[in-house]
Image 1: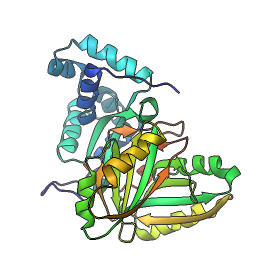
Image 2 (image 1 turned 180 degrees about the vertical axis):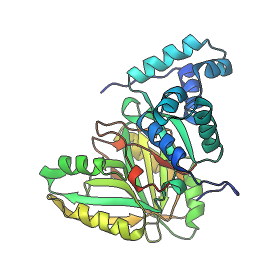
Image 3 (image 1 turned 90 degrees about the vertical axis):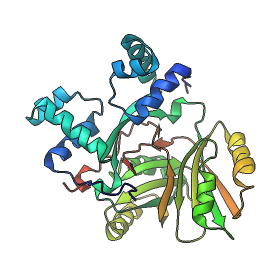
Length: 165
Length: 157
């Protein structure tokens, strides 16, 4: 696995873009005393090396997804990978990880209401290879640093059909 | 969840279409979106500006954990005793490579996700920065193995 290192200038560019991802290279350059071309070249390197990616953040209030929490899943050992892929592909899953311990998959999931969440978890629990599930509803999220992502080949969560205009 | 008084976060059909287009390609130009949605470029620009100002959405560049030197994810479940959960959560916001803190109504009341260099580093952060905090009755560390996937899309702006 490759580690891509960022120098101080890269770090400053990424910090600015983390706050305002649609800022132009020219505006970033002006801020940091760099040419537009220098900014473009650095971003190109970081994007090609998959050190960074562009993402859209939508406020939870707008999404209509009123409930969220951690879902713990215990699977047959041989089914862990398949279940992980399945969960990662769910529309309302923003994080999934293989873990040590009794529950070998942990995911963060959202849904519209407690009732729709219960239905969704019941459907997940029916999947072959899943031994048991446990859901812990979040009361609050005192900290969440959205400047991190961990890219996998499963794409981004697509919750749009749940969002009411 | 919102702390901004008076921010109106309602969106109409055009806003929603713009959000969908940005979801597919957060780097899409206003010009391309204008053409796709059959409106003018200044309309797109104004709509995006308004949605950003009202904290409806934000395009963000995110760091890929899987290409950084801190790719060992760890989750720490914390039982709080003798101190308000919110206070302990506040004290935890400064720890190294914190990704998120979640609170629950029942014990263990706190869940912390953080990134470390390797399992030893994860343990060091737990021992040096979390365990000594006042109000922590007990904690349990869960180590993430391979295939860590995190795609923030829903945020508290």
